[in-house]
Amino acid sequence: MKVIIVSGERGEGKTTFLKKCIDELHNRQRPVFGFYAANIQTSLGNEGYRIYKVNSNKSLLLCERNNPQTGNISLADFWFNEKAVEAGEKWITEGIATENPVFVLDEAGKFEIDGYIWDSVIKKLLQLKSGTLLLTVRNRFVKRIMEKYHLNSTNCEIVNNLLFTVEFVDKIE
Image (cartoon, rainbow, N blue to C red; front, side, top):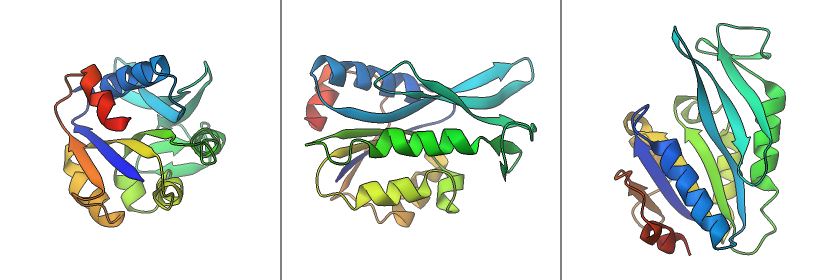
């Protein structure tokens, strides 16, 4: 499994970069599985996230800040929708039997480092022999994500220049 970490801070364009990669991969008819996340902005700031399946119009509310009605998983001040977590795992893993798949997971951070949310699916993907995992990670978590999942310069590339080019997608091919 080849891993490409797209790193940056909140609002710097990690998800936008990822969406452009997904579009170009679709144009090249590559099998792409997983999801990207979009934050829910209100006048109070970031109040949660929705996940969007990369190869359909499906989306689900993943989590909301300070709203226990969202779901039964509480981490920090977010409440996670267990059904959305299960759907996200399914959206990624449905590509496991595909030849040379690209898996998209937006994003991994403290919760995964601590063994929650996407941790188990990341571990499952890293056991695969073929394919590419595109993973977004905030800068401050890159080192800890790499340590947790035993990533290094031989099996992982870090991209922190978020200026998209089609040549970047050539690296995935």
